[in-house]
Image (cartoon, rainbow, N blue to C red; front, side):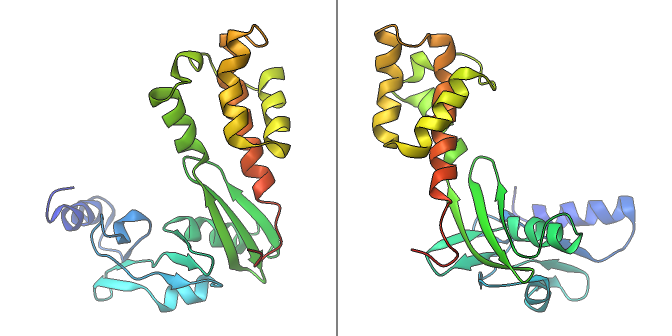
Length: 205
C-alpha cells in the first residue's frame, strides 16, 4: 500500500457506501499497516476492544487493537472474529476455538473473553516444505482427505514432527508410500501435530 493509501481506500469505501463510521481490524493496525496500534493484553472481551480503539479520525475511522498473550503470542484481526462468534451465539462463551490457516490460532474462551491463545505456523510450514525444502519433489500431489492424510494426522498427534517429516521422503524412496500420497500425508502430520499441541489447559506453559 503506497503512502496515504489506507486513507484513500477508506474514502473510496465511504464514497460507495455512505459516510458511516469505519472500524478496521487486522494488519492495518501493525507496523506494516496504517498505524502501529499497541496490543491489548489478554484476557480481553469485546468491551475491552471497544474501549481501546485507536481513532485515526475522531468519531469516523478507528482501528481495533490486537491482543498479546502472557506466554508471548500475538494476534491481529482474529480477536474480532473470535469474540464476534461468541457474541453472535455461534460458539460457547467457554470453549476452545480454532482458526485454521497459514497461522493457525487456538483460543481458550472464558466467560465470553479470549483468556489465552497460541499460534502455530502450520499452513506456512507446509508451503515452505512444498516449495523450498528437501521434500519439495515429493510434495507435488494433491492434499485431500483420505487414508494418507488420516495416517499423517494420527502420526502427527503422537510423533516427533522433524522425524516424521524426514520420513515422508524416506517412505517414498523405499516404496512405503507413493509420491502422489506424500503431500496429503505431510499435511496430515503438520495438522495432527498442531492439534496435539493445542491440548493444554488454559494458562499452561
